[in-house]
Length: 470
Image (tube, rainbow, N blue to C red; front, top):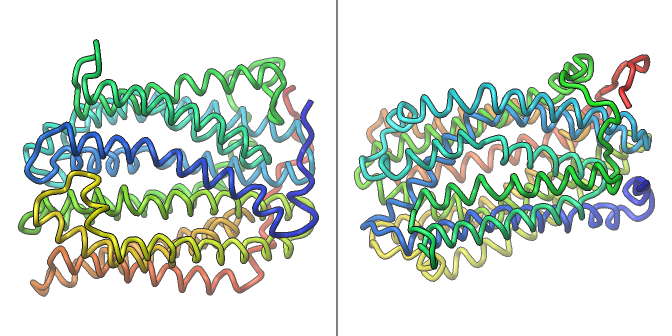
């Protein structure tokens, strides 16, 4: 049976952080890669004057994530509790927490999100005001995502549990398999390779939902064989322990709300873009630059955030919160360095980056270049912010990042757009500037909280008398 990794809670701080960071950063880059490749293929194989296929996928994902982001409540609450108990090397509780979270997530995704999402997909697309061509391409893709959402999000739940327990390499292996399958399936179905039909945007959707299901089967096989730190119970049960579920939700709900806030803001931002002249070109530039090119920064930063969350949670569990905080500070510096590196590429090579997606329209090119200039600075701010956010959330203090997200997204991002709109001063270029301002405010507020010590003392405990099913 595998042993917990004690180097996460002892020894050199940089080594502890790096041990978690490199697999998680690579994992998140791989996660983003298949979406990136889908968008490149769509840009080349789905005809459209203003890259309507790219806009269709970007709009669908923004809506899809809003509807299911509450699974982050279960996922993050589970990760915090697993990290805390992994720091204490309590294998039984780690395994019980995972299985209860997995059951809850499956019920929520299959029983609620899938049918409601399928039914209301047309209304959601009409709400944000997409043009008819984008609507026609986006609807079948969005419905595919909703029907088979459980493969995607149970895979996220599973890899998150492995990360929190201190097995980032296993999570990386599973995601490499997932991404490889996704790329192969999507390439065949988007382009019509060989015997396969050319399905365009719909083909990208099939690859996105089919590949994680295969990876899930492999993960459960490894758990059944005892090859992982997390073990499945010898006596299966079909309803989660509500004491554990209550704690998972109490810790994770603010993170879920934070995710809802961030993604609703993204949907409403698209609504502002849709209200502008040349809105399809603006949506395409936003999808290519923010959703795809900026994902080189965001996916990496999400990996860094996960690493900081795990190292903070496990060090608190081991009784050494200040060591965890020191590691998170190092993570913030590394994030800023990465953001600056990618930002330099955005500043000096915007046109070649846009040509990767076959962006030929002058409007898309102009909007895209301007957005990349803003994102060059946003990357530095966001990478540091997410590292510190991961540390704060890993301690169990999930309400503070939620409040910061509300202020930066509703107060600054949407509030700024609304003020400019009412003053008849809003245009697509100014929307890009407001995005940068929101990232700056979020960074300042997060840094202010991180400098204090109160959040490191957050109590996250499961009743010691709780019976654990083995």
